[in-house]
Every structure is written in C-alpha cells, then in structure tokens.
Length: 98
Image (cartoon, rainbow, N blue to C red; front, side, top):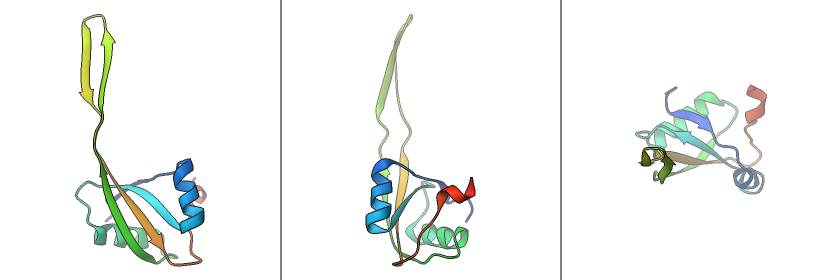
C-alpha cells in the first residue's frame, strides 16, 4: 500500500480545485487501481473519508535538444494521476508534513 501514492500534486489550478470542489490530486503508481488509491489515501490520512476516485494517464511528450553532435530526441515519462473527492468538511493539509 505504501508504494501506491508517489507524491501529492500542488499547482495553482489544483489549489483552486481543492478550495472549490474539495478534491485533491496525487501522482500514483502506474498499476494502481481506484480501490488501491482509496485504501492508500485513507491509510495515510486516517481523518478523511474518500468518496470518489478518478484516474487519468498523462502520456509522455516528445522532447529534444540540439547538441554539437546533432539533434537528440526522446520522450518524457508517462504519469498516472488520481483525483480524490473527500467528504464535505474534510481536508488534507500537505504542508503540515514538511
């Protein structure tokens, strides 16, 4: 269970979603299912109840750079994200762990 959640995602857009919709985003293991994510969040944060889990896979983007020996091309890695909806009135404070 401890390998399911990789890290919480904190961006400007996700902060607005947290405040308005009470949803939180995590980067999760690629083979993790929705039930695995729900169990891992409720285990790591015992004071919250997960209502809904939505997952999405962000495809890798093509990347490249020019060097002395020519153009080097590659791709960034794929990432699986999970959006967690919590029960009304509950919240997760990511910055208390720092």
